[in-house]
Image 1 (cartoon, rainbow, N blue to C red):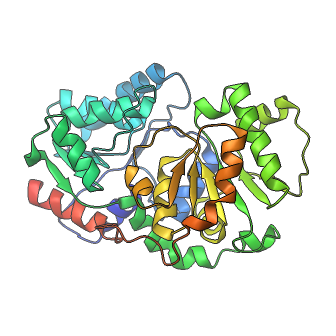
Image 2 (image 1 turned 90 degrees about the vertical axis):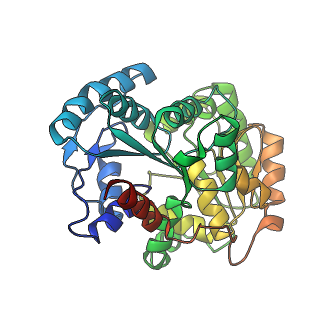
Length: 349
């Protein structure tokens, strides 16, 4: 979602850029990957490293080994990395060791929780990247606090919102809600993926118990990865499958359509916190920290621990935080990719 608007904007400027897309394969579900590429209009990657699963160290090392010969063959002026995944860190390390400039999209975000692998990736990338493209004022402040030269920092806005704005007309035509028999603003949407929530049986049990209790009042819709589904099945909980609907993983457009019409969203994702805030949909983040504090400040998002009672209470209070018309945030306007490409044109033109 973050790279698609940048690719599209560069493509609108023929003769200015010669771009190559490398898919590391870190997110290795082929059906889901193909769906996102198709729906977001991302071209076929010039290179697919096909790395797949593994520990953090294994993934990072394998991506570096696969990425280095690609960079050496293409000899780019700049490597653009987005977000905070292992792929972003690995590509950054390869590039800087080869003396190639790195531009980090979504720089400066901090949860101040170093138990999160993503936090370590963010901090390390921002220390060595050459151009830090930030989404919000708090990100600028974080980089200043860490002693980063302000000459490397440019606030460009949130490129995730570019993807959302660009696809809203298509999102509004999706029929996934109707097909699931759901009424607008009367169901709770759930997305969970963080190991801290899904890999620990006791923690996952608290969350599932909360979902079962919530489903007695509102339909709960949970697009769930097969791995997480197997862990839920292992808990042996009994619930009404018509009230707690576990769906197959969804593509970008269908998931966004469910977000748009939901009563609220329960999540542990970073990007969903931003999308719900822009749309004005109440968000309940099952974490104790967030790298997107602006969503908390605006009131659309709250943090809750993975405890049944806290989650149930947050859902009951969610309607009070709805912002019809969405939240207005500086530079979250669907034009972040334009500003990013303008910066790159200025630096390397």
